Length: 302
Length: 302
Image (tube, rainbow over all chains, first blue to last red; front, side, top):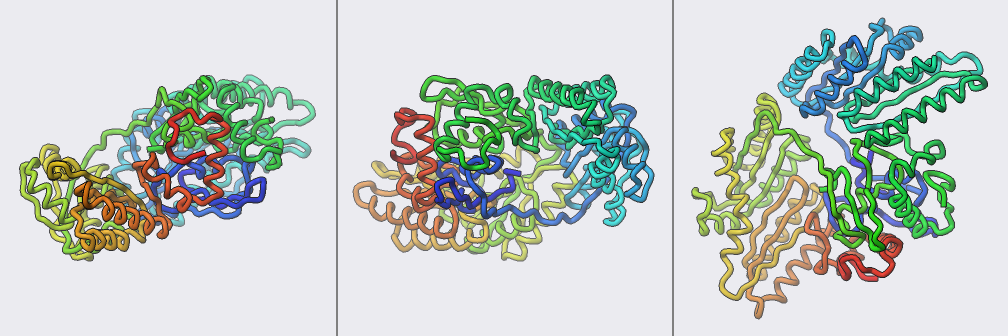
């Protein structure tokens, strides 16, 4: 997100209104307040205006997917694509459970192979997209992937991408009455991704939990959504999520790639950022909001 | 720069050592200390280690140049290229004075047209580079540009790019004995760039100053280097630079795209960021370095 924020207007705890920066593409005038307020979860001030960058609609786009025998193969392929610097607009990984769920819910108008699946978006010039599709195809072949199905027609692209769009909602629809859904995200350096994905998947199976995995895997970021009986299974789910988070941090990753800390992940802050950095964050909070009025209780405590 | 910094190890004013973040590609865990320390000019701590992103060497590269009748035409072409989202690795603008100076110093092994010149770098797949070169050529034609000279051979690319590499050093070599060089940079939203470039060039001429312009124009960022007699012309040069900076800020730009504030541009901070943001920056400085020990006197005063 932060890469798309040009500037923010923020109301501070004492009522002052500031703008984080003007709007040149680059600036080195003073501290990067724009980067500081973006993602601070409202704990440093109210954001009342945001100027965002726009992206051009590309000349050509492509949507593609393929399946893999295992999650490790899919993660290996995604990792290799990113490390070789092939420009892909998105690389999304969904596991076999997620594909089963989408088929069961039936809201996409198509039947999907129930296997680990990678979804891609491409954009650029016609020739550039073609080149990138071919480079991706080569890596998929090297990693035991199936045929790469590529759509250039907009309406067919929408059908292909619908599995990605419907993933979370299909999971929620699967809940039995009275059951809950726990959704979480972590991110790790891309080289550690295949390990983390595989370990987390085994953990779910070992604990007998019903959960699916969906990754914005080009960023080393993935989400687990677990459906569970709040009365009976909360402890196992909590352990499963905690273990995944600790593992991600130990791999030099983060307890949250994009969801943020909020209340639920405060306990992981020290382990991830360290006592020193946490003290610096507290110092900044104290300087800007000495009475801890803004979104109190979130991110970390006094 | 900040987009290439994965994390920093920083020694704070009180001797504590922190790491700004772990190394996943994305994280939303707490405040963005990485973005805060990067570009803080050593005023918040000593950076002792930096982890940087690496970029893949592209499959294909291209270096190209063309000339224009006026700076406005060149700036218009560059602006249009950026706004149409054509992926160029670099777009550099050099004015006629700069080209004259490079010819005079003769360190590039080639004679250049003494006209406003745009230099380009392209990278990607073979077909992608070809597509992008053609898109750029079309825009150049629409903006009165000359023929686009494109080199794909590495050693010929180096010759073509040498004018860009030698620009600043050639200017310095032009100094008469005892004369000084004033180099400065500003950046504005890309839509305002043609206006600012033209106004600044007229200003130089009006004041009878010998200065050249060189822009990282794809970023709306450009540099002016003025050679002057420190005893006689300091006042005019100072006025010329001040006027350009004020104009850039009034265009919602910045007094410095990449040089930083240091001592020389402290006076522009209030105008650019506003009293409120400056107070926030002071608050952060006070919180992390209460005795103002780190790089004292730089960026802003207590």
